[in-house]
Length: 181
Ligand SMILES: [Zn+2]
Image 1 (cartoon, rainbow, N blue to C red):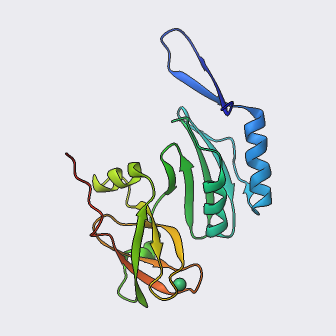
Image 2: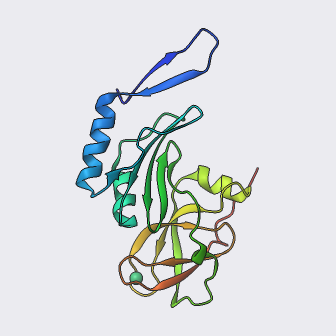
Image 3: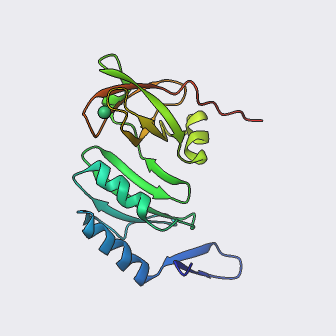
């Protein structure tokens, strides 16, 4: 895709990835159009490269991340920190770094939301193994039927707030099961 260039540090060394300057410029321009600001956007964690932004609206952040070209490099991820969670996109797709604390208690839910589709198998498999506290699914509001992407606990009820009508939905992911075989 011309999105990344690769080289080897040495004959037997780890393969490094380099985001091209043009790709970083394109990601920044898209971010500015989505109302996001660069935030420590050249950070590295070990061999991972993180392109980090911050924004005030989680829905805009998710839309920005979903509209990016596919992330084909395992060591690259885009991250947007918002007041409503840290969202990211890597080669496995959209992810939520960690559930927000209020999501664990759905006892005050206004209605029951439903799982429309699972978005990305990797996050689901990791969550089923207890690696990561959520996976991303497309969910539908039980009050207004609006559909959006949110993080859910595996085989449990999660509280999610509809970005359209504001209803607190309890969503049971018991219907989503990973069969290891
Ligand atoms: Zn709604």
